[in-house]
Image (tube, rainbow, N blue to C red):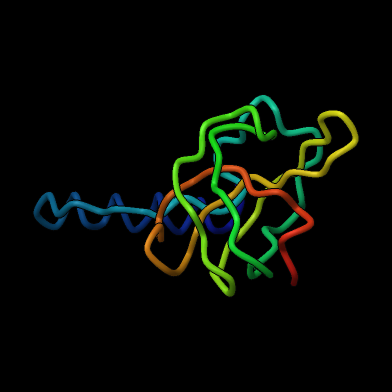
Length: 113
């Protein structure tokens, strides 16, 4: 068992013994469930910004529905890439702007690190 997991287990046991307090542990980046369309996953999420107005989509191509528009400079953390028909698409989470907290696909050419 890794050290972090041991610490969480020990802390949980102590809290439960001390009065049944609830312990919430946030998932790590590696615990994010990737869509099946991902063809390459980063070891660590990449933080980026959009370079233009771009659609956030339900899948990795223009044929998928847009679920929001990201303005230029919107922060986007991406976890994996897909390459349908030779075009790069990034899947991740919007971290700023009107769509903050939403997950989806962005055309990779509109992202900069």
